[in-house]
Length: 337
Image (spheres, rainbow, N blue to C red):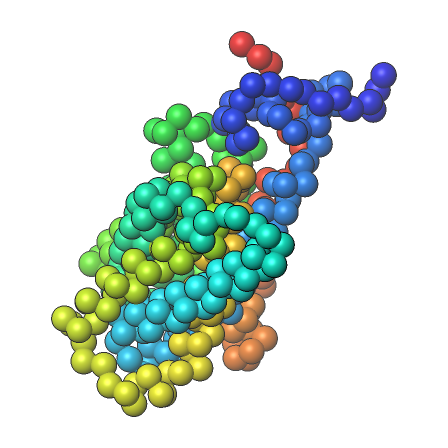
């Protein structure tokens, strides 16, 4: 009967296989359209929250970078994130003991160490490349090129055997157009000089970080993986800080508020939300949600700093939000081979 829904059961993994085949836990109607599952919507909203935090943290990052070097700021926020996440783990452990839980404090130790090294190294390299590239080109161009991972993630997925459907490719195209209108239209030209190559490398490294998180997040606890990731970032950035910079106590005092916001909210909260959300989410949809950081950064500058947004930039924001909405809409399931 029309309008009656049935549950399609298959022996498959929990994530979309890229071919449009039915997955466990999804509802399909008789015309072959699935009803958007709540888990995908929830995880997308978590990533939008993370993008909001990252976007608003741009102001704090800009202020903090005026007081100290890039590696010093990255090390400071990363160590603070480790303290914050360790505190969350201890609070959670205390609650588990009250309930009589016998679970160990660290779960899947070897996999956790490997995940922390891989995710942390990718995040450190991407953050360092971004900071070096920002200093040699315009902020608008830096924002555009960094967010090109929204294209690179599905392209990488093709080589990894995960082929996004035509709807997701359409969403990526709409998002890139919106990103261009927001960041570059009428303000800058797209050319590849030294700084732009560094930012392109940054986009590639953020693509790697998204894919590595996508690999490890289903296997590990989200908070523990986030802690291990930032412990690796903290160690690497501290080494580079003492090699290339000369931090002073006055620098830390001047940038204390910026370090606190970026360390707790941007690193501790937002990146943990990324890990938790990517557990059951297609990486292409994840990259679409995460690139909204550029939108929230522009809106934060408009609302907090009194910066202006042109009609073209607002149109770019609308297109990027539209791409996220389109990615959540039902699509027709392809016929089985």
